[in-house]
Length: 287
Image 1 (tube, one colour):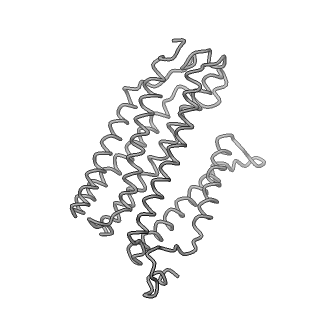
Image 2: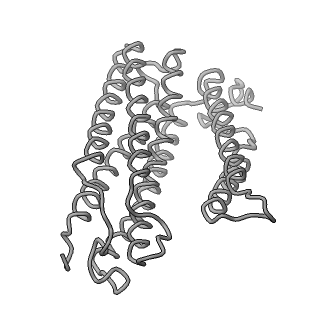
Image 3: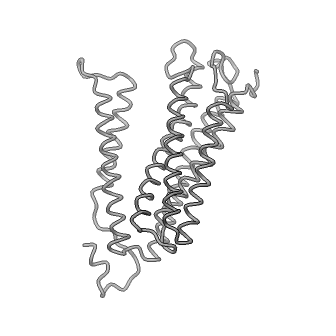
């Protein structure tokens, strides 16, 4: 098993991962969450029993369980088994970089959908963008506050990184706690914003409203999901920092979280400028 990777007869520097059930379990849980959410949003029932919300909740619990168990195993590899050699860490860095690159392409697709509708308004939107009847958010109200929160969180996570490099784990933990708090605050503001939206899916009155709502909520909602995931990621790093898992020379677990968080920051700036500000200001032909 894992111990054999560190046997004195092993001469290579690579880390051979033990067989793990978590990739399969994670796929099943994520599929259950997605299917349950879709059924919930569309009012799917079996007989008179609405099962969408319960299915989504079960999938969410499964995802959280897998996150806990998978993170536990990776932390054990790094801290207890000392399996992450310098060569293995290079692989981890490439893996995280490729993961973020794949996430970039997700958002490229969402931006593409938004700009396709905005630059080439059709009859469905009244040949204007935003569509007639859509009351957009004031970009310099709640969205601007959310922007400030994320930018501030980017500085605190950088503070945490420099504190770790200097061996000041207490300061790093303090900075991480502030970053996690800012992430939670951002999510709360987004929930507030969504609850006060004057447009939604399947509006049923004007097709153009559905197009705007779909592109808006897909882009901003997917980003909100990333903020939530990043907040959990940083919270794990916070507790690991308190336990002394990171040193000045070895803290890639934190670096991966910081990379992810900065990626989330940058995506939000594009969202704020293109969707909240430009897209809501009547800057497109027809206004």
